[in-house]
Length: 337
Image (tube, rainbow, N blue to C red; front, top):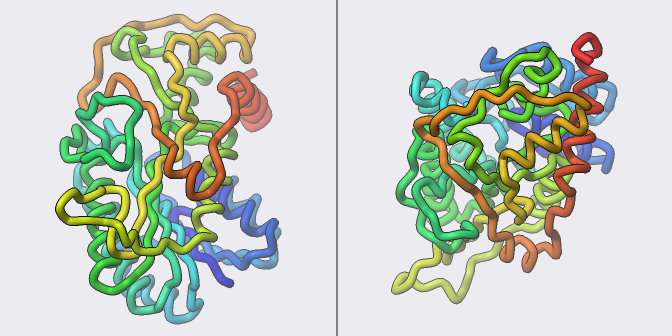
């Protein structure tokens, strides 16, 4: 079986590729290698995959309709994992068209190719940001998510709607995964924990929004990868009990499912910073600031559906995950330590 991973040079994509390759799967990875953050980090992730004989990388953008169709025609993918997207909540406020191109146009191109090339299962990355103004905790896939507060979140919600349409019209089996604040080695430099580490090691203040009154369901990368692989292996079936009289957003009469993947244990931001300080052996200089536009005060994943369907729940403690990240950071950026 040949598996396509889009966004293969990304944080999650590269780690997923490595795990699938070690299991003996044939993997084709694509990425546009844009400069949203350090391209050298993306290339370093890809370098880890290059030694596997069952890996092929092609630099390709999802908005390249012709190139994508050529790739699907040649490789005959049976399963696809879409991790390619323009990421970042705050970046979407100033750069909206980057999200329209990648997250909307690109996703339609991918759906069309999955439809026309008889892909057995498409798994795509959604986000906890789709919960927007929802305040009922924990966030459940059975709740409506109609009030996003960033364009990034709106595009992820749109992806879920577009995917359901293709599942309904063409019987394309699709599963959407709402990731909750993924962190760990080889992570994204635009994420807070990465910026915090860099600033603390350089004796610079860290920017702490909402005066530190934030909670996040931080989820370690290995748990995310384990969840994605388990989901990828199980093709979704229609929910025969689904009713339009009381429609469940998390399933459908079509072969469509949504799942949260989170640690199911929200952590106070200030405790997260304290844990990072202990791992680094240094104190942070705090610059307390008000809430930023597009941000939410708390995230908390209800993972009951994930656990029921796959007998799986993330278990990595925040102290363990941060320690692994700090060790990696100091080895990747040795001059900073």
